[in-house]
Amino acid sequence: MQNSGYTLPVFAIAAAKAALLHLQQRQSPQTVKLNLLPGDAEIPIEQVACLDQNRALGISRSDPGANLDVTRNTPIWADVTLDPFCGDSLSLVGGEGIGKTEEGQAAIYHYARRLAEANLLEYIPQGKTLRVAIILPEGRQLAKRTSNEAFGVLDGLSLLGTHGIAQPHTAVESLENAKTQLQEKSQQHQDLIFCIGSNGFQVADRLQLPETAIVQVGNWLGALLVEAGLREVRSVLLLGYHGKLVKLAGKIFNTSSHIADGKLEILAAALAQYTDNVKLIRGVLDCPTMAKAYQYLEQENLADRVFQDLCDRIRKNSQAYVQKYADTELEIGVILFERQGVIVAQNAIAPQLIARHHP
Image (cartoon, rainbow, N blue to C red; front, side, top):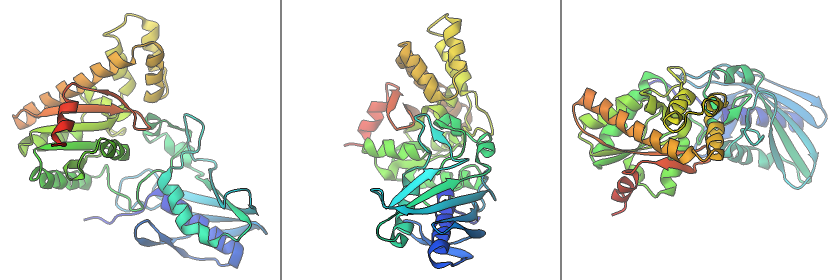
């Protein structure tokens, strides 16, 4: 198996720790030890420098290991400042290159903040607040090569992830890993759950679905649906962010943005079944993200009908795909949710498949 690297939050917090140590102790570490929650890692540091008596800069460089990742070798800066205490000991903010959510907040998520607390709090002097500004000098440019906008992250990259070890999502190895996971879980369960993205796990947990039946599928939806058919699985419940899973409604069975996108075009085609208003259809195509398009259709009282239609199209196309390549029938439930994990639509069979996991 190829070597794993680390996720972007790890390098950001490593740079911050190096800068803080340099500011307080005039150390210039070549590596820093991080608690990854769980596990530990030694992370290389490229440079550290004091900017004034209360401020320092640390620089690390992203290494996602064998994974295909646009952030490979990109520099990550942490600009740290010790200020008088202002209510919180630690403030983590986004600088240049860190994307913003549609609400205007820095796209720095829960794991990155937990990682910062676990590795920085003990070094903050009493009576001080540590302000950490994470900067990705190449972030805006790199974001154009990702599907960040589909997830509502604009103008930069996000510090996203639920763990420190980078998991392969687009390499061929990830498909083999997912197939192995599916094969093992199909021996325990006739009914499986496919989670697309980390948010899928949050929705599955909220629905009290058993982890032993969950397969993390990444972008390889078509290949894994066929594998489920070949393994004589009875049903698959698809849990996915609407900006990703909607691609199956357009018969796109690898959801990587590097393969194909077309989500807004697929949505516009579905909308055309319910309205002849060209202005409305153009309005969808002009939206920057699926989240904005959903809000737009909500305002027009069309979101429920259109996204229900998309769920039915996803089911129909997926069943036809499995029939074609595995020569078998597979029950398929579909649940679409928005970026915060709120369910926006599901097909008729989805509640029945959920019930099967609650005997």
